[in-house]
Amino acid sequence: MRQLRIARALATGVALALAAGAASAQEASTAEQTVDAMNTLFGKHPGFRANHAKGIVAEGSFTPSAEAAGISKASLFRGPAVPVTVRFSDATGIPTIPDGSANANPHGLALKFKLADGAEMDVVVNALKYFPVATGEEFRDLLKAVAASGPDAPRPTALETFTAAHPAAATAGKTAPTPSSLARQTYNGVNAFVFVDKDGKRQPFRYRFVPVEGEDILAPEEAAKRGPDYLMQEIGARLAKQPARFRVLAQLAQPGDPTNDATKPWPDDRRTIDLGTLTIDKAVPDSREAEKALLFMPNALTDGIEVSDDPLIDARVQAYAVSFGRRSQ
Picture 1 (cartoon, one colour):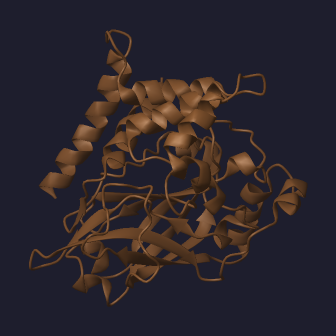
Picture 2 (cartoon, rainbow, N blue to C red; picture 1 turned 180 degrees about the vertical axis):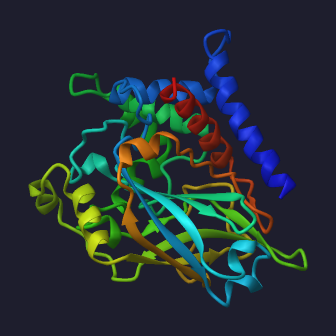
């Protein structure tokens, strides 16, 4: 509990410090440069996130499986269900992007678990099966390359040069198709985390949220025909009738599987365990207002779950803090 409070205080402090100190810093941090690159690419939209700007907030609960307590001592996996606040989202920093646009992929799912002791734990996943790059610096450079590679850019473009040196950047986006519903898509944890059990045994893993109803994917031409807000409207209407449920799974790494490179998915034959069920049963009355106060931090964890050596985790934390500080001004 004490460690979690310290982590949350540090996260808040980082956000405030970055927001206040950006103007005076001689050289912008990688996180600031990343958010600046997003603003260049997507435009500045005051009050909105720099990425995944368009979204909808909902509420539900998480019920742990009997199996989960055996692999982690986290309180989340013991006792009764705990409340969860979730935010579904489209990619890009454009708050009006059409839901069926290819650029709206990957769709995201961010979760804030309200633990029994009053603490909170965050999980941030999206529809990609692996990430385009392995570090925060590479992600910044990818965004800059995209921004510099318009239709009139000389060949090879900056993006073509970048993807030639970073093969995953050319293929990762193809792993995130457009669904008929935000409740009918699988969301993956591209970053590795570590379970710690009651005996101190450590097990690296990656999250996977699988819809109980199964995936329902649209062909690109069908997605393009849908209304600009069809996903956001559909999920609200769906939850008004019945809950959306996801199986929360953990894919377990074997020795030698990389935990520090999000561009490298682990083989499909790796063991997967059932952690429990996420049940989302209602959209909040005013999503736009609710999401203003929400900050999902991948390092906001609880005893029994730890960060791995994946450098993208800290890069995401730093960039989220910068984005939160700016949109809160």
